Image 1 (cartoon, rainbow, N blue to C red):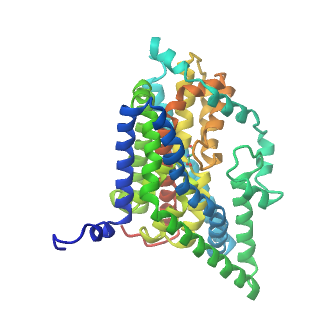
Image 2 (cartoon, rainbow, N blue to C red; image 1 turned 60 degrees about the vertical axis):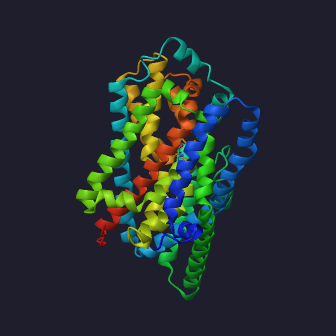
Image 3 (cartoon, rainbow, N blue to C red; image 1 turned 120 degrees about the vertical axis):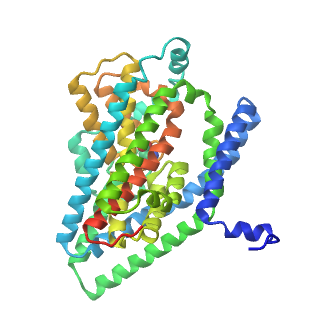
Length: 441
Ligand code: ASP
């Protein structure tokens, strides 16, 4: 490459993940700068609200609109391609067991750290007052949502959709009380199983149609991802500009406990799995999934990140397509290690903050609820907040307490979503290996 090469040719040759990374860095720096300079300026607030935030939303929505057809086609094809029901049963059981094991480890890491550091105990005086004043309207809205919670029996029943189309249309609707995306997945699993069982000329045509749908949806997402460097910049700029560094410092110990917990799971637990159970280099693994990590971080949504993780896992990591489709699609909702860890830490932190002593039964309740939350929480920004309110109330901490952590929730949401999707890909690698796939990294 000669030095005289024009700048735009150079720009074109930058790989996509580098461009997204640059977008991320620019967004953070600009956001923090603007926070320091114009945090109180009305015009800046307007600019954020009317221009920069909507721009980021355009990027998110372009992907969101493809998620439902993607989940349906990927899951049906994944299941049908797994072929016989016995292999499906084996892969399904292993995925479930491994998910539960990883989620449990993640929750235990979080709870251990929060019990050692006790981030909620030392907060007194003005810091405490400042935090109490953050219990706002938004906390109340979350509590109202949590109040609509259903019984366990109803929750399980709702997994089986009466009308899968209704669950698909309301999958990202906060106020929907049906099974939503999990019910859609249940339906897709069944269609896949039935498709694998009825092999005829006509079902082959149906399968090819689904394959066509899958390809088209992936193309749409490919087009949307061209916007990613700018979309990512806008999304993180809004967070950095609104948040600044103050609130992070105020809740410093809590933020650190969450981040250290997430890092331990990501860099130690997953690395052990990848190195010893899968036999690949954890470092190369992380390098190959950079684009997934940045997308998860900037969008705070496992569901929005799903198309990117499907592509990267199949192409960069060479995990067979049927396993990628099956494990990642289910995992985008049902395997959320970061969310589970966070739920546990938040509940214990707020109990410490409000001086509520949790006995051993209540701590066990928190562990179980966090594991379930990792499985049941929607893969959308802030998906875990209503669940946190429920767990808080069940252990005797007022639901309003969640307002204390609202200020830092978004940045921690971005971070836990990274762990959520990295966990999905780790499970896919593990399952692929156990099914005899050759994985070289
Ligand atoms: N934002 C998370 C995800 O999509 C869910 C949550 O923890 O709120 O993975």
